[in-house]
Structures are given as structure tokens and as C-alpha cells.
Length: 268
Length: 364
Image (tube, rainbow over the protein chains, first blue to last red):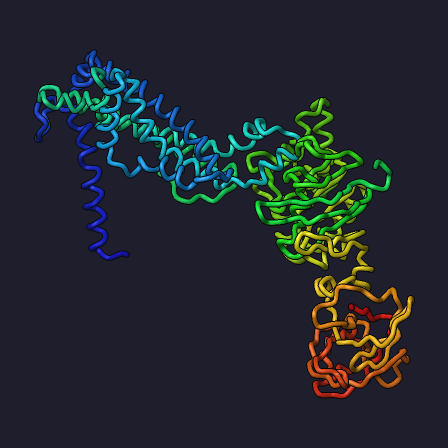
């Protein structure tokens, strides 16, 4: 695979992927209201402007509330479902698991629309809570997928061994199962958090008067003067994503090293 | 029943998985301090039976008693048994010492005393000084030893071993067999071993229960199983046995007179007569080493037959001959220890075969 054709293809692909992201910090520090070359000089004013924006802080607070709640709820539900599907036999198991995983391939728009109709009909006011409901629906399949693979690699004898050595089912879960699936739990939390954070359609449909980060950023693009501040915000989000990914990878590798498995794949 | 000669008692134990009848009326007793094996092909219910002792598997009817106490409703974590799993089930996130000491968590002894117990257990299995190692960095044989130490540290009444040697290579397996026997004598705990390897069962056990299709076919000490298998099925499963068709001529209360092709008329004692014949009718069975090829000057045997050598398999210390005894249709296998100065015979050679009626078993 050392053909120059493949090499240039690879380079073009990577440029296409990452060039727009590299532009974010460049224009975030550019001393001009217009997003265009040539660059006009260095400034940190856009960060100051962004920092002073009260509606932005409100959106950040909403997004954090939603994403953290969604990550915790989806991972907890995923834990139950993954444990049940890998450990127990029950009637209609395949069908039930299929229905849980279905939102993975269901167009989000359909989920958002149908939920909106139902919520309005039932008379539940649109709020942060309704966004959380929608996000849990689409994040749980991801949590189930990640945690199922963590549970599947767990030898059933480990559990029986702990039980055999005098532990109760509860303490066995706490002492043996939880530590061994912890890397999966952390991955699930981070991925659900990320999916919820940048989700737009459900947040837009079910948010009512509450604005989240993605909806706020989309709204700001209507005002050209606000765009450089958005670039500054984007820069911070990119740094945050890289940090989260690095943390997830650190825990994943530590989990593998501790259980003596072989490293296959991973993010970084 | 709380007599001192019974550690485990199965009373007509049945187990169903839905429609599948996995255990079909197991009744047996296992003595204290005994090395007991459950031997059988895969799917015969031996592992299921072991798991009913551990409490991982409930039973559909009957009773399992440990040391005189009915185990109905007693969960696995409250039973006086510990298990060595086929996969060893070493906790990968804990150190060797933490693994071995895992069962002591609920013990009220002081930290120092527990550490001492762990060190002693490790020394017993030959892993002195391995305590701080990470469990996942151990070899197969070392994991096996950790699993043993972890189970034995709790001083259970019964140690259950579920095919513990099947994952090891041949050399390691033979070494561990000897060590398990030594360990069992040292601690004096009842060991119950599940295995599909008849050789392993013969080497290690005081008594063996041979199981087929959810039933115990024969329960006896290794020598009885080998010399006097009670059915053709057991005879086939344990070692190699030759079979020749036989016709019963007459019988009395203490002996049977038969006519076997190639052997002629034979007087068989009642103790050598077993049931369990197949549809083919009565057969005589004999082990390869009970027949001898007679050379010039060999010691005389009770009876002799003439035979033609059809195949020679040379094993260094042993030679296996497939010979056809005059008057029979199928060849039988004879094993001969190779002795210096005694030639290995060639294919097609004629030979005198010596045998003794006392080494035969009649299945009818």
C-alpha cells in the first residue's frame, strides 16, 4: 500500500476531515469580525465577549444538566439491559433487545416528532426534562451496545467463584463484576454525554423555551457579528472533546492492562 | 444419616432442563477423605451432578446431603464446599494474594493472621512468594495452583474440581495429577473430580463413578473398573477391551460354561459374569495385556491358541499386535512389553497366544 495514489488520497481525506476544525482556533484569535483570510492580527477579545454572554452561559448550564443526566440515566438503564441480555434467558429476549436497540437506526426526526405529538397531547410542558427523555431514548442503545460487549467478555465462572467463596449476589456484583466492567461504564458515560451534548433535532423540537448549546450556536449564525465569538466557543469545545477522549482512552487501556487482556482497537 | 463413613449422599437425584432429563435417579455415597471421580463422556451429566453439590444447580427431585445435612434451600455461598473451575476463574483485577485471600473477607481474624494464612496456602501449592504478582500474568499451571489455594484456604469439607487439568498440556497435566494426589493426602479433604479422561480418573481416584446419559453405570475402585467392568459400555470407555462372541453352554450357581470362537470351551466363574451385553448377544471381553505371545521357552500359560499377526504397532517400550486367532473373524489387540533379546514379530507371522480363563469377563 505504498502507492503514491493511496498516499495522496489519505492526505486529502485527512485535510477534508480536519481543516475546518483547524480553522476554528485560527479565526477565534483573529482580530476581525469577518471570517476570511488574510488574518488581521491577534486578539483574545472574542473569548472575552463569549465569556460575558449571559444567554450562552444559560445554554451551557442547560446542556450540562441534560448531558450529565442523560449519560447517567442511559448508562444505568444500559447496565440493566446488558446484564439481563448476557446473563439470563427469558421469553422474547431477542425481540425485546431488538426493540431497545431500534432507536439506533430510527431517524431522529421521527423520534422527535412523535415524542412532541405525544407530549403535547398528554399535556406535559416542554422543558429540559423532555429533552432528557428524548436523549435517553437515543443514547440507551449505545450504552447497551458498549456494556453488552463488556459483560460478554466476562467469564460466568468468576461470578460463581465469588459466590462459592462466600459472597452474596450483591457483594459479588460490587467486588467482581463492577470493577471488571468499569472501563465499559466509563466509555458508555462519555459517549452518551457526547451524543447528548451535540444533539440538535430533539433539543430543538422538545426544548420549548429552554435553549441548549447546539441550538444556541445555530441561532447565533444569523448574526454575522457574533460568529467570531462562536469560533472561540468552538475552540473550547474541541479542547474539551480531546480531553474527554483522552480520559476515556486512559481508562480503557488501564482496564485492559489490569485484566491482562490484549489491546485491540481503541480511540487513540 | 450422619454416620462417619458418608460425606456426600445422593438420594435418587433427578434433574430436568425443560424436557431434557439430565440426571436420572442418581443414588450414591462418597466417603470422607476420599478422592472420588465422576467420569463420563461429555453430556453425561457429570458436571451437572458436581454443580448440584456446589449449589449452582438445583435438583428437580431427590436429595443431596453433605455431612448428613440436607442441602435443599442452602445457597452456594453457605455450603461447606469450594470449587476449582475449569477456567480457574481467577479474578483478573486482583493480585495473587488478594485472590487467595478472597474467601477470608468475612473472616473475623486479624489482618496479620489472614496474611499468614494466605502465605501458608501459597506455600502449600508451591507458589511461595508469588503473593504480590498480578493474577493475569500467571501461566496456566500457576493459575491452577492459585485456584486450588483459594479454595483450600477456607478448609472446606469437600473440594470440587471441574475438569481442572483439561486446559494444561500433557506434561503439565501429568505433573499436576501427582501434585493433586499429594495435596489431597496432605489436607485430608474429600476431593471430587469431574473428568472425561479415563486415564486421569484411574491414576488419581480412590473410587470412580462412570456415568452415561444421566445415570451411574458403575461405581467402583479403579482396579475393579478395569478388570471387572459391569457392562460392555463401561469396558469400552475405560481403556481398551477386546470382544469375541460367545455361546453359553450350561450354567450353575457359581460358574458358566461357554464356547467362544477361537478359545474353545471355557469355564467362567460367576464373579466374572456381567450383564450389559449389547444386541449382538453374549461376548467375552479381555484386556490387551491379558493375552501373551508365546516365544520359545516362554513360561507356560493355562491355555493356548494359534493366531496370525495382522498388524504391528511399535511404541518403543511396548508393541501392539493386532492378531487374528484361528477360527475368529475380527482381529484382537495384544500388548507386549518389549524385552531385550526378544524380537518384535513381523506382519503375517504365525504365533502361539497364551491366555488364562481367569482374565476374561463374560457379558451376557
